[in-house]
Length: 252
Image 1 (tube, rainbow, N blue to C red):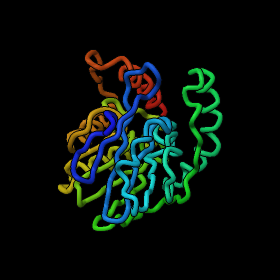
Image 2: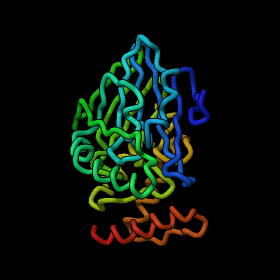
Image 3: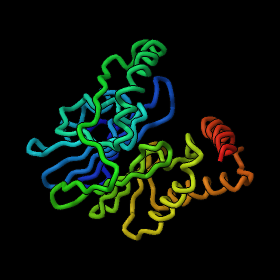
Image 4: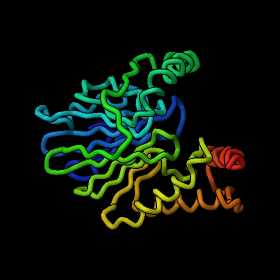
């Protein structure tokens, strides 16, 4: 088993990869297996990050990739495996088709073709209303949660008690659109009160429980209320994100 894959339970795995070459920031994904279907939640930054998944997807399984949102570091690894379907929010489709190709060219130029093996693959199926994927013996519920980006979604599997939240939960959640913050907070509070949630897997940082949801909701609430938020103990990347968030919130 590769070092960038951690077994959390018999049928749940945490996947991890570097964000950029020489960068200490980590991107998270997950692999969730049912009796008939395996879901790969986010395909990480490049195909090489997922080449090991042949070991984890049973040969008789349907393999489905689900994108938490269309930020490049969560979907540029999709070509690593011949997925039967790629699922995302309907707003992600436009981003994949129109935003990511130009970004890929710029990043390959900037990072000496570090992403040369990336083939951008658009979703096969998009949605805006909640849907449930039957994995065989368990269900993965997909719900739109406009937050870090308008195309962000959550995935919840009650059988495993796992909530997959993409970039809606971070040490300092990055605000791109201030108008989304009130609904974002409400969604985090709602899920934090759900007793079925045992494990929360964010798009970056360490996994944990509902305390991660509370932490991000508390931060966003303080931000929207204009409260002073201590940043001295934060990493440089989080301090930078906070400064950007303060500027964006002035538009609300």
